[in-house]
Length: 617
Image: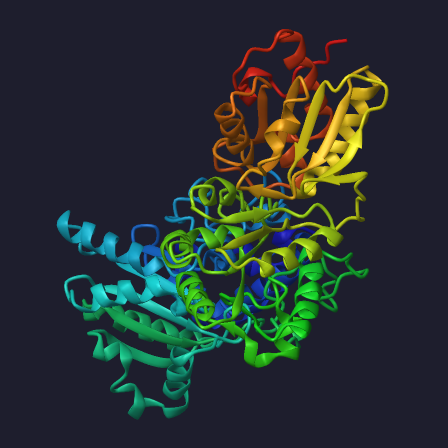
């Protein structure tokens, strides 16, 4: 049976207009259908399940009170928007949720006029709301409401407070801040703000008369039962009539209505892969990920060294810090969704004689570039950054691909960056990084299963030789970064079958370029670099510049990701699409050699040798 037969009320409410016409007594049944639909759909594809199960009644109330899309509804963070997608005609598309070519896991302007911002990095919606409300006042559209749903710990981020500071001082900007308070980010929310919200929830109306929001100039409504649609509608209608900045404090339960999520105190099934809807668990035990390996290695290192401390930004388990936090709770700090604070706090920990390890998603680390540059690197402080989900991440799409770090961090003076190719090298490089005292260090890890170790034939000046052709000229040197080593070895095998001599070497440390690498590269006719970061401004670019400075004639061909926002799709598919498969690499090498048999002294670019070209015998 299809959606219409199994979820008849949901099938009837395919637009906000249809929802507003639905009798109020049907809303509990509709909420039940939505939860059943989400559990079935998200368990089949993977996605953010727990946050959306807690958003059902609140989203219904928002869509019934506000006239979307004339009124504007913003989600912070955007992974709370699944119910919103259902109520704006996208139920049938959920079979392709987060699949290649399918529905995005976040609001998407390409999908619907109801999605105004593609908000997946937290704590930004109130700033968007501030600007929109100002624009509507200046253009005379003051009847169009601006509503920001701020939840899943986004209120712990600094940008939220910058926006609150501005909004509270501007009564002419009637932004409605719906605080979706489920007491959690990924894990339970920590800090003084979380404690203050607890006081408001337990103290009731007497405490609500004066609080941090009213002191900042907001009206305050709440706390409200986030699963009582009628109560929510009444409060939201009142908020709209006030004509001033308002905080509507709503209490919800993450994972509401789904036993496995409500029973999972660790993360309430915040984000899941493909799981059994009856249990919320995968059918088979997952293989160890790079994150798991890092967590194990860091825990061991912390056991050996009392100066090792760790920080993260609301991502304790997803970045692998759970084991160390359990063993050494006073040495692990979750600062909330506050990457900038995390980095500068780490700088001060280093000033105090400790060695901080800051574990962040690569895409979120970009939010604190200034702090890395001016607060850590300028002071030459020994802080180690471990960037999880570096490179292509897959189903989370353009905002979550960790593809910018190499290009951005290459501009930081004194920073050293490494990319382990296998679990053994992860432990080895982590120890080298935390043993460095002259400035910041970075390790980048992919979102992938950690494969088997790849032994080196030899190590020369810190460079691991993984493969060298025998009895053939050294035609091509392939320099893969980190987890692209297996692909490089496959490409080498294909090239050797066609008579091309190949060396494959793992630089281990990518930035700054190893001083021994230019001379090593000069022994070959062509050098190919492989990186799952931008091909411009990353490792390949740095190597080419270094070779030019040494007046070396071997051309460098950097292969990597284009400077573009890549869609959501499986990691391997996107790597292949960007020319980072074994076959594409071999094709590129052969075409480059055939087109320029007498290679001049210059740097080739990926566009000079199309990745999709056929082989030249």
